Image (cartoon, rainbow over all chains, first blue to last red; front, top):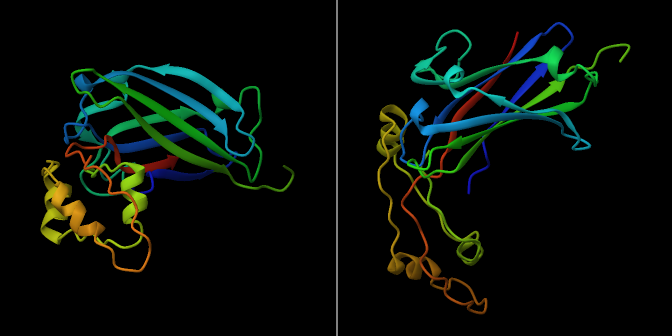
Amino acid sequence: MPAPLIARTTFDEGNRRIWTLAQLVGAHGLLLVLADVDSIEVNVWDSEDHTLIHGPIAIMPGGVIFDALAHAGTLWTEDDIGANFAHKLDLSAVFATTEAEGGRTYRIEYEITTTSANGSGDIAVVNLATCRSMFGN
Amino acid sequence: MPEVQATQDVIETLGGTATVEITQDVIEYLFDDFVAPTVQITQDVIELLYAPISDEPQRPMPTCSFASSFVPGPRRIQGVCE
């Protein structure tokens, strides 16, 4: 099995949001569309001590799954086609009670449950976000 | 992205001895059209791959359990800060 695809992002105190974008393919071999998705949930974990920082938070699929690929040439730079999944995570909500620590990596993990008709089960989208080390933290 | 699913015993049996080549036209097909070609690996292929190439003791022959379906998931993924 190939290594799972994981996005890697670096943020600092100047960032307010982290986007996670992806081209998702279902068990049918086609790009996932909104009708294929039952529910989406996001959790943010501390990658080092595996504590849950934020979540689980339910996300409305209609706002993050696109039947027509989006964000090409703007946020999405992997290719010129675009992404069918895009979610922006509000960092102020994630770190409302636990402050982000410089040098520490946080695992933003989306769990996408697809419809039974699709038959593909859950899809995980993972973005490893590292807080840039700053003087003083 | 399409994948061939193999059980762990198959992978361990084949481990390190088999090379799978995917030609450019297949890659272009996968990445440009988002359509899945069906990949089928039959029992005789497994037996061919399994043919001993060293003096290692022969391990039990795995049963063909490949699937032609996709493993669903991200094909490309990206993170962006703002």
